[in-house]
Image (cartoon, rainbow, N blue to C red):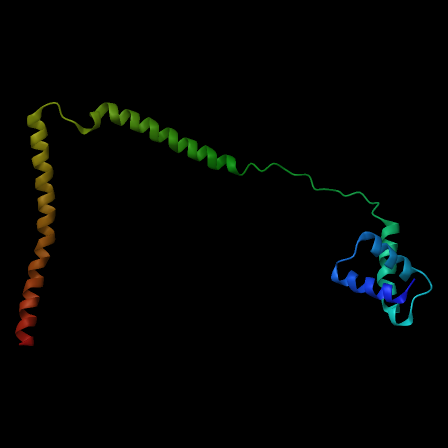
Amino acid sequence: MDLNKIENLLELYFEGETSLKQEAQLQEYFTSDEVAPHLEEYVPIFGAFAKAKETGFNRTLELPETKRSYKWIPVAASVLLCIGLFLTYNQKQGSENDLGTYKDPEVAALKTKQALFMMGSFMNKGTGQLEKLETFEETANQIVK
């Protein structure tokens, strides 16, 4: 085979641009006894490829048995239990209290007054702290002046 052609094929081979036919020509050249001295360093590479092609793979692969994972079952059971308890509790709660409505308008007005009074007392507790802040501001203004 022409030495220039082999060198060009070898260059294309290392660039990854050869076809299977060209690679077969390279393998044929490097497994023969007529290899140029400056190309002998590539003989072991193509010799190993030829040997690997001959031997092949004749062992059987043992794949591990896949065991089904049932780790999600307790989570699913917990979710279903929570949903069931929520629905059961909501159903009983809704029928007993009738969703917080009152049939008698006087009772409804009384309950509204109680709720507003309670909210007002909470608001007054919060504004009680503001008096201390006013005292602090007055003192700070006297010191700054």
